[in-house]
Amino acid sequence: MVTQPHNDGLASSGSISYSKVIDLSWPVHPSIPQWPGDPSVDFEIVADFGKDGYFLRRFSMGEHSGTHLSAPSTFDADAPGHQAFSPQDLVRSAIVIDVTAQADADHDYALTMNDVLDWESDHGPVPAGCVALLRTDWQARWNDPDKYLGGRTSNNLHFPGFGPDAAQLLIEGRNVAGFGVDTAGVEPGADTEFAVSQLALNRRCIVLENLTNLDLLPPTGTLLVIGLLRLDSGSGGPAAVTALVP
Image 1 (cartoon, rainbow, N blue to C red):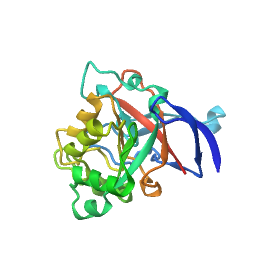
Image 2: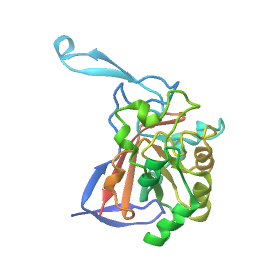
Image 3: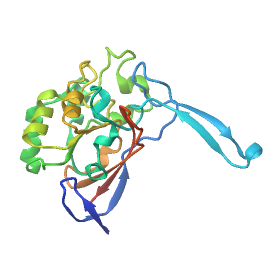
Image 4: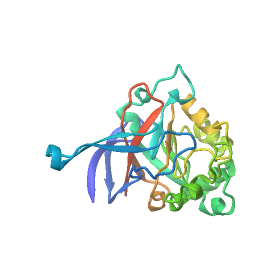
């Protein structure tokens, strides 16, 4: 067991004991699931050992490809990009709400207020300042983009996510710092208005999408460390999300 200093995202400091470090991010490669219409993921070798004595690639991808953190500027031209988040903002306690059974029965399932209240009945109040992670086990579909997205056009996608009423309760009633999910969007794919994303980003909340390994996290007690590729003035960017588990 290792003890390290940390900041829980609530302007406090102290220490945390953890026994496991879990990577919640997917590796980036050209075949990852892509939102319909987004730029492809491309790699180009610009130097190799035989010719140059070293290896180097150029890569390009959309700002919302793979595991990523959205920025407030996604839906608001006057809002900031990743500069809205300080390093302290990106170290957060996390809870995990498990809706795998509901999602298996209904691929358009939206987390409800009752789901949140049921979680609190089992685990206590949702801590202020935490990131609420939604476990759907959609990660099992990652290697089949059609199954992961549930469709091939942006107006016909099917995957579970946070419902707007539950999201509003978590933000306004529980003061969470944001949301994360193991699907392509924090709201269900059928929500073409991006209601939860807009609600969260308008309040400068964290929005993490395309996470993995949420099945390895406990309902409470995890500390998230969110590393960013800070693309200046962008709408978001790739994130390396690490979980420290007690």
